[in-house]
Image 1 (cartoon, rainbow, N blue to C red):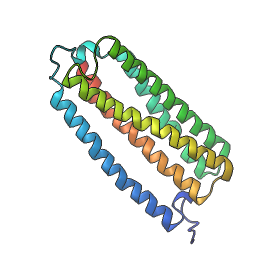
Image 2: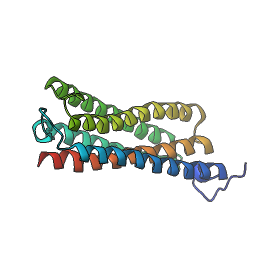
Image 3: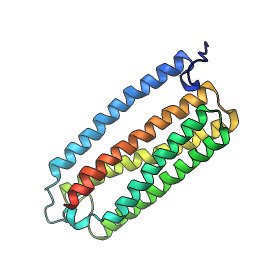
Length: 198
């Protein structure tokens, strides 16, 4: 395996570069998935039937908390990548663990939000609007959950093997995934929650 020492370790082999390119293609498919979910949501936005509207169920405070927590996790993930490139293992792991802890906080707030909706009688079966809302938020939440398990596996590998061409490549790809989820959330925050509260 030929290693190019002029590039960051995660890009240092042809295989690594191809994996990163392949992951960008995967993210293209994810964009298509979330685009479909957003299109479904906007199509069914006014299909509330006898159920509550967005204005009646959305509460700004937990959404602000979710947004701040997830954006902060994106920042700490970036710091982890920077630390990795400087070959600072302990700071990288600290920032990575912080990123995953913030992801857990985000999920906790989102689960509480879902429980609140259901307690108010706003379930997937109540209306087309709520069905599409739960699908959009639930799919994003499922991606975050998967990201936490994936991140834990990478963290264990970094602890065991240190920074290698393989572990740095895996973590860099993971960081692309995590930043993608944050971008999706910005769209959810802006076009679902804020627009729904107007």
